[in-house]
Length: 251
Image (cartoon, rainbow, N blue to C red; front, top):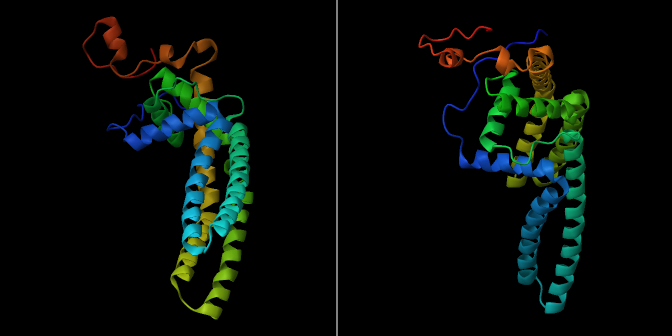
């Protein structure tokens, strides 16, 4: 693929939502401290689940002794689940980051813009945003689903097959119920994901490779950075004191 020169930056046409900025901050935090972030997130989620379980145990048991037994067993299960989920997530994050995390002081809005650049496979005009996009492109190419789309699709298909067997048994033994309807829709979602994942992964891989090649071509080597070789529309005219619009071609 021929590296494409910088194009119009895919900046948000409107200010990003508060949730998007919150998510971007968490991405930055998770990449710089994967284990601590994973334990914090899963610890809070499992704690909420354990408290709900404790409320149910208090309501269903007849004595304080039984309540304490169930609470202790639930707490042990919660701790084990937290450790398992957090360690697995931290290891996966370290694999994707690959020793090149986002800088701790990254601007979350720039990060959101960089994510849009990776999705489109093109560079923008802001050097810092493009540097973040180059980091994200490398991380995208290290994701398991991008590296092994066939294995991921096969796993989703196997899960869908197991769900189909369970759904059939459920319908034969108990008939239609709310649970069987929920299982049907999850089965449908996994089946669609198994079918759609390979082409989506191939598209994401092409875009990430295109952005990586463009950044390495225009922002490194004898060109001394694309932001010096190429001028954004109107930027070079402002530098030269001219008022006519720039054509955006190489200077």
